Image (cartoon, rainbow, N blue to C red):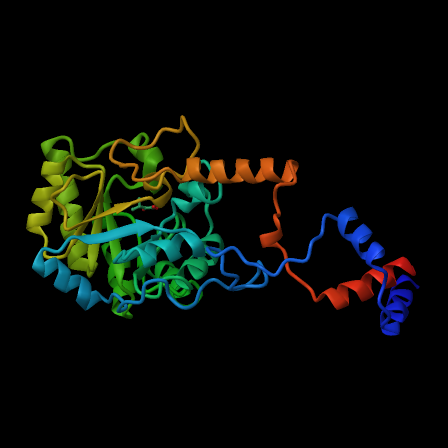
Length: 342
Ligand code: KIV
């Protein structure tokens, strides 16, 4: 009923009085505007436009031979975690060599207490989202606790899902000597595996919490033996987490594959950090690990922006005319006349 009467009025095509138009405009705080803010060129018309293409920083796709070459040259390998399209997009644009969809997403993206809760399906959803953004970085998915420990066959099945459904180029799993058959099985079908020794957070309950590893000679020897074992099994690189820097440096010297340190000092072949830690995307007062250098304050910037937006909505400063779409005056006049007739 309402729609048909509007349509009838519009089809009449007569000009409403100027008074009617100005009354309408002032009532709804509308003013015809044909200007765009110089710095805010309108390139999209919907908030739902895809933001994935073209790549923000086009460069060659990082491959295993390229990582090997970097290692040979002593060029440190850069790695960071990402858990969704935007966090992967920015990491890829900033030139990261490896992007890891770490199971730390359990906490940083899903609000869980620890990594033991996250499911393969949840990891896969996030891997797919990350993989759509990682046009250049070598992308690795973390196999969550419970998805590979039962045996090599289970592990291979999970790894294949990570590649086929998660669209990653490699997988990571935690452990040393005991996961050798598992790594051999996965790498035997051509899926690159990144090892993870030292502090292995998936086993935090057995380790008595998130504790530094390799602090005794015997403990350090165990980390070395684990690293050598996963290298032998076919890992292309190994993450060494939370060990004293001297231990990690010596292990790095003993290995022929790159070591990627996290809380393991400067003597590793590369470094990895959890993105939300290093960008400061967490509320004030939250504790981050000692090794995690905070390079930014994303929380503060997001908070400032959202709080300002809130204030501007409350005070009707936003949206300003430059944030609105214009229409031909003639069409507006016809619309006003139609509205008057409703
Ligand atoms: O899950 C994760 O983010 C990780 C890194 C800390 C290496 O395993």
